[in-house]
Structure formats: C-alpha cells, structure tokens
Image 1 (cartoon, rainbow, N blue to C red):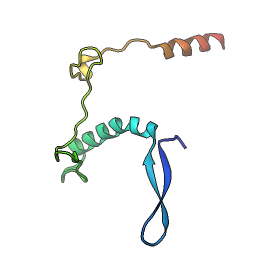
Image 2 (cartoon, rainbow, N blue to C red):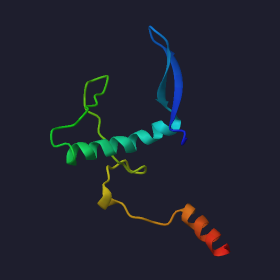
Image 3 (spheres, helix red, strand yellow):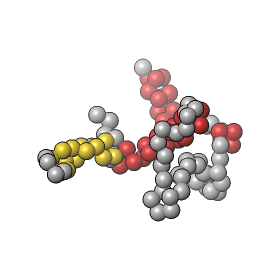
Image 4 (cartoon, rainbow, N blue to C red):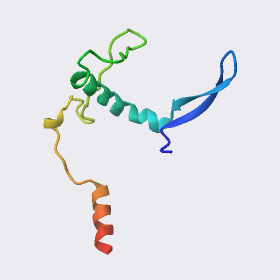
Length: 98
C-alpha cells in the first residue's frame, strides 16, 4: 500500500507467477533496511548473522556509512546537531491557525 514493492509477473517452467520488486521508493529505503540489518547482526544474532550480503563484483561485505553532503566526511550520531526544518515551520503555522 505504501508503494515500496510492486508485483511483477514472471514465468517459470510450470506457470506464470508473481515476484515482488522494489520500486524507486523501496530502493530509497534500502540503506535504512541495511542499517537495521547491521544493527541486528551486531546485537541480536548470538549465533551469527542469519544471512550474509556480498557485493557481486568483488564478494566484499557492504556496510552503511553516513557522510556529510558538503565535505564528504563520515559522521556519527555525536557529530550531528538538530535544527528546525521547513516542515516544522509549516506544521507550527497550521497548528496556530487551528
């Protein structure tokens, strides 16, 4: 319903089936899902990760990294600060009119 996946028909040897594929919206969600997977593998998988992801080209393991869009430096939670965004102003304006 959220437009993250779409059904696509495909044929196997016996019949036509449907598979689920990520939409553009789903592809944008991929880094968040991979960050959750990394967290789960680190803190919740005592026996080891339930699945392993590998880069098709070199067989390396992919990791999620946050970088600054201005300087390119990798940043963590303690390197960022919160500031009001334009959506907050819009919400505040509509609340004051109500």
